[in-house]
Image (tube, rainbow, N blue to C red; front, side, top):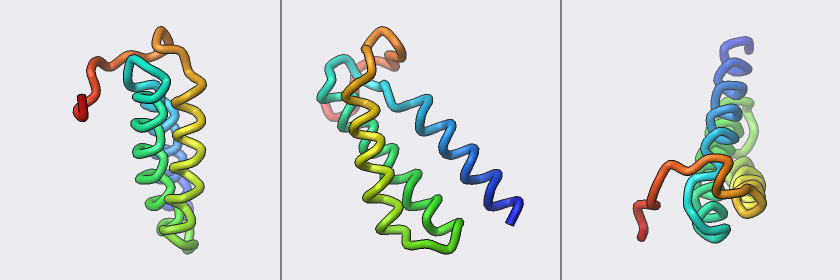
Length: 82
């Protein structure tokens, strides 16, 4: 169980750190949602829960986090979909 907790902690920190990718609030919401969904699915599977439920919760949290961040906080450049 300790290994699973370390993975969850690492993925959570990585997802939060990358939530602000993009220049506009829409770009950051999309990238945050995608990162959050991926991290949520992994966390859900690692903790014995539902990967789908984790992806939905993580995606929503990431999209909200990305939409409310400032482009000056973290800017990793132009998103791949633009």
